[in-house]
Image (cartoon, rainbow, N blue to C red; front, side, top):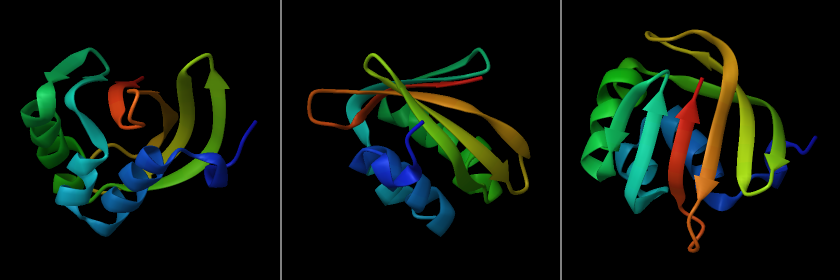
Length: 109
């Protein structure tokens, strides 16, 4: 298992920007046309990710604490402890990056 220090820059930015409440930096961690799936709820493109960010992430003051990281082929599965005014608990977030190292796909389950 790798640690949070081993996270690619875009995933580290995703975590740090969320914790800082910085929506611009959060969105900059994503590719130009990302896909996000949050327990079956689908969000497409940067507008979709921005919407999810406001309703389920920074908009509800989420705070992430990386618990562990493992790499499966081209996917980083990051176990996060989440707290805030929305979901609270621990679970996996699976990130797939594009060729530029930006988050292209995020699966939350």
